[in-house]
Image 1 (cartoon, helix red, strand yellow):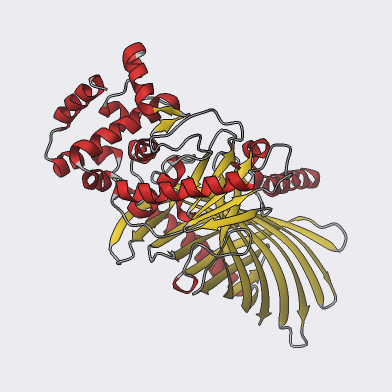
Image 2 (cartoon, one colour):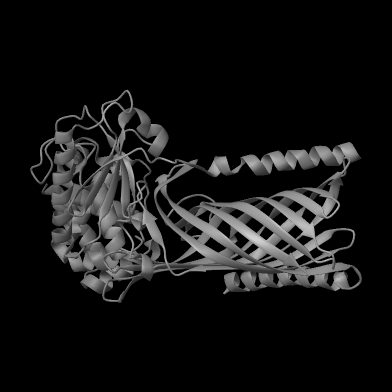
Length: 275
Length: 265
């Protein structure tokens, strides 16, 4: 009961921060954006399970579309609210030699959606460059359904709050701008909740376990933008998105009674239109 | 003031960009030779891959035959059907410590139907409970893959490791009966009762694992595999009442019977 209340409070705090930021945006430069992208998802096995862990084969992987939309505004700081959604109805397994010995690909799926809020404050302004630093946080829901060759199914679904610092190097010349950015986010065991369920080939529930994750996620991106005549802008970006960590039955920061883990490396290409 | 902000900012960036490696790094390990038979998919190193020997063609075949035998024997013992493939990644001895964390064995990741193991070419002589002489890989990790995959995430260490040691029959290439008899006769403080096993009162694997294996064998023989399978995912706190409701036997009575069983070994 207490844990449920804690989660609700954390969600409320996140949205309060987000709404206060939006309220501040009334009299500032504002832009919406919409984007489409391709996400290459790779979830690796735990080749070495002692710390530091090693991610290895086999891997579950997919190439999936991503939709994103966001709102940015600038006052003393540059704020951004972003919603990302990605889904794939096909997951492949790769044993390291390109063969799938594990999954029924078309009966396996992956879904992820994230709502992020973050802002940048100026750190340094050397010449034409600008280096910014600030916090980022958000709410994530992820669901992965694995259907094994035998028909056994495993579904992991989790809701996570994450928070961490972000930084960027920005350069603008005329209509063209470039940005290199890096964000690192912590998913803490007391701010997320997951459930793993498993069914046998006959569809009967075998087991279900709650889990609480401790993940560390980094996003490294490069993007270029071009301002159009009507002040709208288009942008093209690439991102590397890594998540490493483990989820236990209890809310702890070390591996014990492991239920689930993420050793993921994803790559993303995104095109955005700002208006 | 500006220098201070820059210094803090750069320090933060260095910390952020380097700390994923403290948690996990990427193996990118795809230099394998593949051999499959039935549901066994063996990945091993080609000859000359490293200074330590890679398995020969005969050794590869022997490993596959043995694993296929265990695959079927485990299903018979657990009375569970299992038809998924099991992927084995066999590392040479001189790379295993770095690659998988041990050069003396391995570990399994049941969600990926896989296990990672060391090819110990100079393995000590040992015949397992199935009559297989000097197996390079025993049944232990195969039990983990099949039991976790069919029964779910284990709720206690005694069920997870107990199943694996019971069905392997050995620990560190010694019969678990011999180990537990040695503890009983020479080091009685290493003989663990059911409460010590459920609540994991000892950290030493070499003490815990053989005790857990013998205890599971006793539970299965006394109360049936269905009872034990039903207890597989039960957590530590609920284990005793769940056992009593499934078996109809008070925990204390079972503990006394187990003490008698150990005396009779």
